[in-house]
View 1 (cartoon, rainbow, N blue to C red):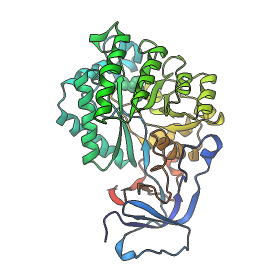
View 2 (view 1 turned 90 degrees about the vertical axis):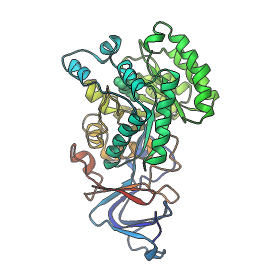
View 3 (view 1 turned 30 degrees about the vertical axis):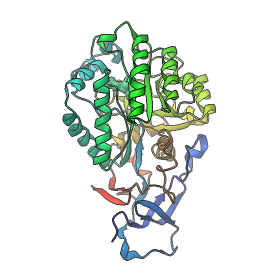
View 4 (view 1 turned 120 degrees about the vertical axis):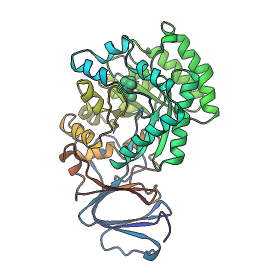
Amino acid sequence: MEMNNLIIKNAAQVVTCSGFEGKRGREMSDLQVIEGGTVIVTGGVISHVLQPGEPISVNESDYRILHAEGKALLPGFVDPHTHFVFGGYREEEFSWRMRGESYMDIMNKGGGIVNTTRATREATEEELIESGMQRLDAMMRLGITTVEGKSGYGLDRDTELKQLHVMRRLNETHPMDIMPTFMGAHAVPEEWKGKEGEFIDFNIREMFPLVSREQLAEAVDIFCEKGVFSVEQSRRYLMAAREHGFLLKMHADEIVPLGGAELAAELHCVSADHLLQASDEGIQALAEAGVVATLLPLTAFSLREEYARGREMIDAGCIVALATDLNPGSSFTASVPLLFAIACIYMQLSPEEAVTAFTINSAAALNRADRIGSIDVGKQGDLVLLQFPSYKFLPYHVGMNIVETVIKRGSIVIKN
Ligand code: NIG
Ligand code: FE
């Protein structure tokens, strides 16, 4: 029997999410489900997607067989926005928030991202690998098979590189695929207070060439926010990043409506993320430009903020994706079950739209929809098998992990 050869037989549903690019608007409702289907992975790649009764044309003795009667099979989940490599925790800040202090107040008094930056600078590479590994294990048990991870808790040359090296080593040693993003402009560190423009210049002049030369990141991201980085600074930073060939991402319109969505559309970013406060014009611009609108309901939930207008964005023709935003501050969770529940219950996505948003559309947010995010011949054999016969149980069984088996490139990596 070859490694990475697997037949998943007679699944109650094969939820293919079929496609090779992000889906917009009404396309998000069509999951292209095959009831009673069979999927064959050969050498780690999906080689056959069979209707019930279609003959299996490979030699079954070369394959491991998984019987999937009564269970739904989906593409592995893709989490396109996290900050999973960090030192320290911020449980005190959570208590302060529960007493009424705002996320930005806490940031302005030296807590928030800068607090985690101190702890991340102090942590060794080994410590970050160890905690990163545990977080990846937890995400994989929830069905995530590809995760994006950002730097941005170093905010100096060496610690930013340390975070990116940690992701590189984890990508090499852990079955999870990691897509690294450089986020040198995540916050203004103490030593650059009042010199935001110069800090942007430092990232453009010193960091982009370094990160690009060592191929440590595929994308670049910035926190475009009142009191952090302005629209003008974000434009300058992102346009310089594009010169190095990076994909562009933005934390846009999270706390204050600044025009982040409009800028993301203007620059044709691969995604604009958060968007709690995006304007009507911004939403329309994202739809027209085909920028993926990545929504992070666990953050809005944790910060007790209004949710992004996911329903309206889909109706406006946007490509909507979902992500956990796992980080030690605004969203210390990678709970996929809660993500599905909130997306459906509070953002009014249908279960079908939520599944599209966390598979093929989240793959599109990483520019990887040609390789992952659906069950199509030629795609990587990353799959999840649920304990239940329908994808509809994902939001319905609130807060419960119903993932039974996780398959990465045709190998079973998790049996819950
Ligand atoms: O996506 N908004 C900025 N960045 C993160 C939070 C990071 C943190 O609080 O440590 C976010 O919410
Ligand atoms: Fe974030």
